[in-house]
Amino acid sequence: MSETVSVEEFEKTLRKDRERITGRMAAILPPPEEPPETLHQAMRYSSLEGGKRLRGLLCLWSHRMFGDPHPSASLDAACALEFLHAYTLIHDDLPSLDNDDTRRGKPSCHIKFGVALSILAGDALQALAFETLSACPCPEPVNLITSVNILAAAAGSKMLVGGQAADLEGEGKTPREETVQFIHSRKTAELISASLAIGAALALGDSPSVSRLQDVGRDVGLAFQIVDDLLDEEGEEITVGKSLRKDLKRGKITWPACYGVKKSRENAGFLIGKSAARIRDFGDRGLLDRLFHLILDRAS
Image 1 (cartoon, rainbow, N blue to C red):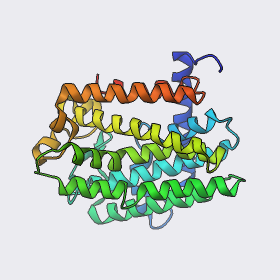
Image 2: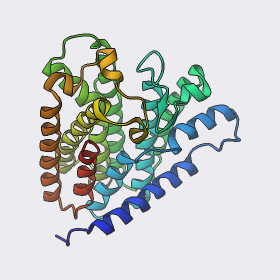
Image 3: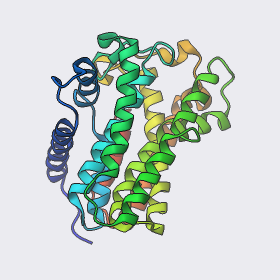
Image 4: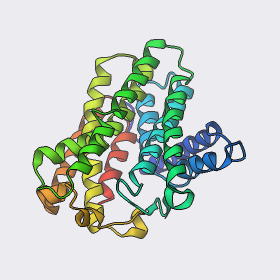
């Protein structure tokens, strides 16, 4: 295996690839002056302004770990994942769901553009995600079909949308381990898992390695949501970029509500440590390892 990347190289690559993803997203999105102008402005506002590009980076770096055979395809796939993620944030913030007025340090989409247009912007971004992924320049049909199937499964009623439904239905109920596991593994973890797996699938097709990477991604995604729960209890709004302390007020079933803060922090650390060890076995030079630990550092 090649020598592990230095902190300096990691940070440089992180900045460069975030810029590449955002730049490509800007090129794919309809221009703000194209009719219907306000809809396209809302799409760009919610997907381009702010964001860590975690899901896109997982896709890019996973693909790179397997030789980077189709770099343009992996970049477009990274954008597709970010479009889908932006759609989920728009809809999550709506008054009928989590009712958040702030996202990424600025007014949520429905505050700036209104509820009706925000619903449409989310719908359009979801469609654009699949349009972008299915059209990405991968010359291997099996690899492309596998990637689209992974994203479709992650985004549907059994995973992402189903997790959101369970989250809403769980409000005010007694926190139980099986319930918090069900919600977190679907609402957040599965899209992070898909991001890691799609990068690999574009390189490997329908491979056992892709399935193993999905499992790694589920642990990473679960740790991400645990950290998010901790930040809602202990974080600062100016740092996190959204309104906090809302989970307790709404009686949400969260990891700290079920396990306590100390145990939650320990669980997140265990999951990240386990995932980092497994990703090194795939040949990661330290990019994904360090990215995993950045997730954990958010709660420290």
